[in-house]
Image (tube, rainbow, N blue to C red):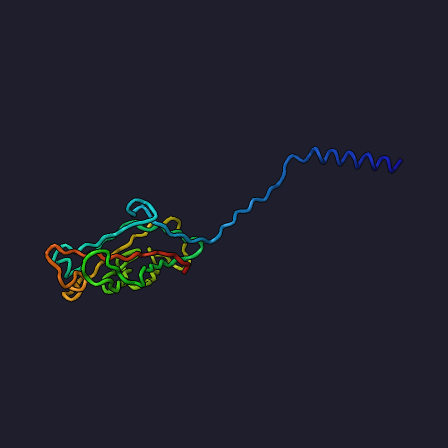
Length: 190
């Protein structure tokens, strides 16, 4: 009889316990992982994966002072979990290649180009690879999400010897020359 009473009590407690359970606990985990990305931003020509910047010498003042342009919001960077560095690498071993004209076939970009990422004060001579740190105030502990970054381009002043090399020995008043180099921007954690 004692066993029967215990069995009835056990069944009653089990049934009441089953009916009393009206909720279920679920643990939700949100995991944040570090990430880095760089792409062309709103300042790019058409928002495509390719952009083009033209620096053109048009006057004597351009040749003596250089020509420049600031492309606002040309790059968009994301760096979650760390600060970041932007690296600019030039194609063709850091040399401008002649696209048209009768001048020399190529010229070391460091003689002709400066690039600044984040601000004009952060400019570097156009070597084959340039590192830019503290871009837009980034530091080793900051995170940014889709941050627009300006890029400054400057074609340096040219002397008579450089002009003769680039335009060619037989240049006339209608002679033009175009030199080109591709710049590839990459991002790395600080």
